[in-house]
Length: 255
Image (cartoon, rainbow, N blue to C red; front, top):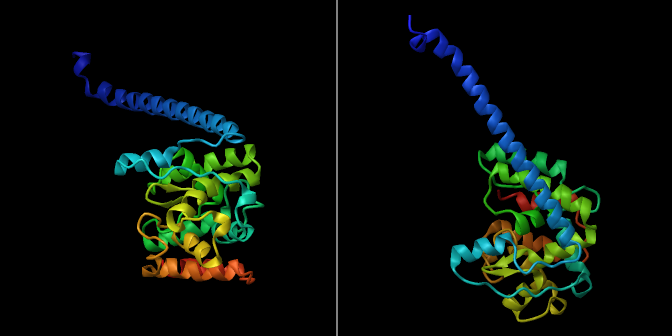
């Protein structure tokens, strides 16, 4: 019998072909991981002293809108009201000073909440993860992005002091269409410097951070979640000692 048409040999060849395909895919994935981690490490070293003039999220927004966006207005931490920084940490990442780029408690909570809703409604990202997403990655909610985000956050946390992570975060966070950073946000929304803003205006900026393309300080009250975030921010800015468990409940109770 002609062996070229032997069904037994054809069946035996299939697992070998599948094995070769899987091995090639594994090698390609490992190569991508090495290149990605090396690229993040190089970027992290540059971020120690360098404030990038362009970054991932800004490039994505320009392609989406065709608008160049507002110019960056970098400010140092000592030019930003300390109560704003303190409030942002309490709301966005209460364990910022202690974790190593990602917070396992927040990730577990995110998995539980997303499973309950059957979709991604809460990311559980730390300030460091949000920085990685803004500067290096993309905003679309995908689990593969979350993995890349955590990996990048671990590297950023290992290379950069916490103060530098916080400075970069507030200078590149999105605060409106083409508006990135607290300096540009204060100028765009209030024609002022960050240090000139009162608590009501600071709370307005904090309120819109989860949805800066859809809401502004004049319209966030249309969202129950953002309105709750605004009330909480006002309390924290005023120095009220709000329990951590209430912070979580107030912000996410409308999800």
